[in-house]
Image (cartoon, rainbow, N blue to C red; front, side, top):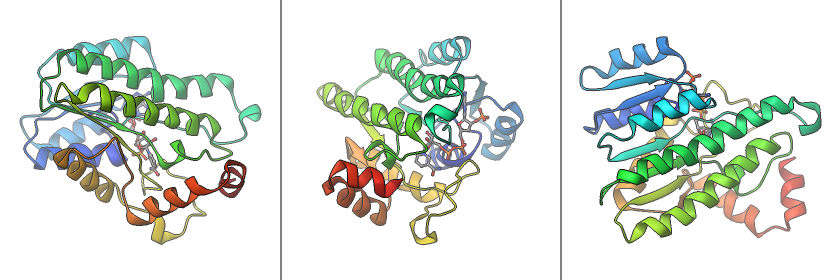
Length: 233
Ligand SMILES: NC(=O)c1ccc[n+]([C@@H]2O[C@H](COP(=O)([O-])OP(=O)(O)OC[C@H]3O[C@@H](n4cnc5c(N)ncnc54)[C@H](OP(=O)(O)O)[C@@H]3O)[C@@H](O)[C@H]2O)c1
């Protein structure tokens, strides 16, 4: 479980533990992970790692050699603002975390995955239609969705389920979409409950939590691309 120290990831860790999973929680902030471990109680562990770095990624991939039945690639970050006006270094770091880490950890997990195992890659509705001002982020999520769809097909015969979870706006501390109507905003717990149901029922390859998000995504997909992108902008 990556990105378990906050938001959707913390909700995943909490709800997976409640469902009987033994959770390994990965993130950078040790104090947050320690607090999570206290909340979860015995039988779980954590790993402090920066997944945008080679060392952090290697340490986490090595840990996946253990007998894990579920990997949730949830850690993700965004850079806000016009692409040309923001730091290239920040954009590349977002690509490392949102894409490179997802591919590396998926590879390590699938190397030893047994039938019945599952891989959840947390993408976004912005992976279907990109949002101006979040260009690199949207593109990384399009990558995650596309990558997960092919893995879903490739791993099916092996009995390993792969799913791209594509949430819309979710109330977490990093969420800055203050212009979004309240009825469209989900809680991390709503998102995770939908994801766990999808894992249980082997739904996929993509799942959009929330009826409003699902309808909006379907309608946006019918629009001419330039109209959809302009609307989101
Ligand atoms: N919130 C939304 O509206 C929304 C919508 C669609 C998709 N998503 C996706 O859902 C996922 C979780 O989002 P969230 O809103 O819950 O985010 P969040 O509250 O900002 O939490 C992000 C998590 O990722 C971890 N993380 C960030 N950078 C990391 C790094 N370099 N190495 C390791 N861990 C790192 C953070 O922990 P540390 O800071 O402790 O490392 C934290 O646990 C992301 O993939 C995001 O793109 C979110």
